[in-house]
Length: 65
Image (cartoon, rainbow, N blue to C red; front, side, top):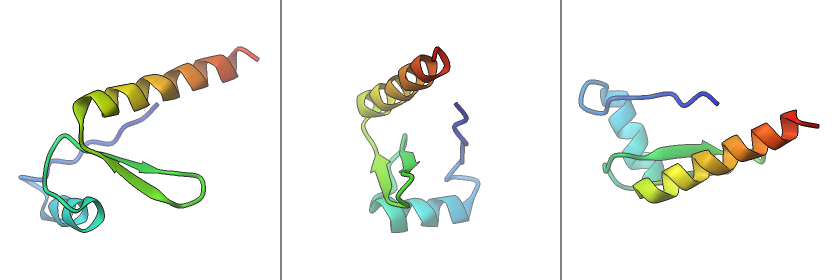
């Protein structure tokens, strides 16, 4: 799983994207783009960790057959 990192203090475009998309300039934030094109923004650290772990489990189980 690849998770791109953007520094909102050094990258003005990243900050603007965060505000426009997620509605607040809080970090950490995980932007999730669904297969449907819908975008979800997670701001809570526990939610971010839970989402990443679920994706890793799904990818591991999918690779097993």
